[in-house]
Image 1: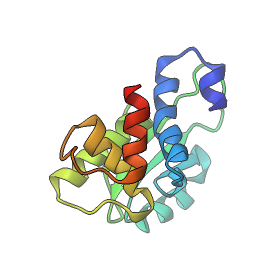
Image 2 (image 1 turned 60 degrees about the horizontal axis):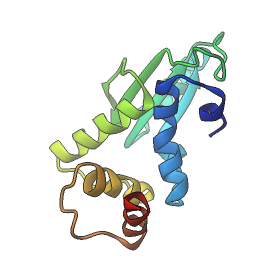
Image 3 (image 1 turned 180 degrees about the horizontal axis):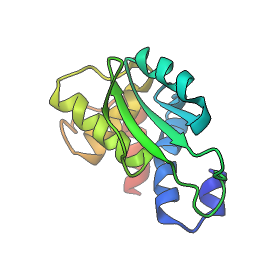
Length: 145
């Protein structure tokens, strides 16, 4: 949230949306998005190989995460330990691409982020929007006010 307050860049603000959504829904986005510094290459490769479903970000060692650039050297999507997408534009873009892959491959949502992906499906994409969990229903009502 502090990144959003300190930056006028719309892309930084958009990258904060998945984090804010997970916080609102009491879910841990850290289970989905893993951030690495460029020098942690071996550690990152080992983590990616053990990841069932997730997003990784790589920040150049010299970059200031709160600086005006604040961008990533690489953002990618991992499924079943395999990097399926890389060099994506942002965390937000990676979240949407992961949602699309889950939908296209008919995968189950991660249990730790069930409500987050339900918001993507039922509020943002308006698919099966008549059946909402209580948390997602409450969010939808607040958004409609």
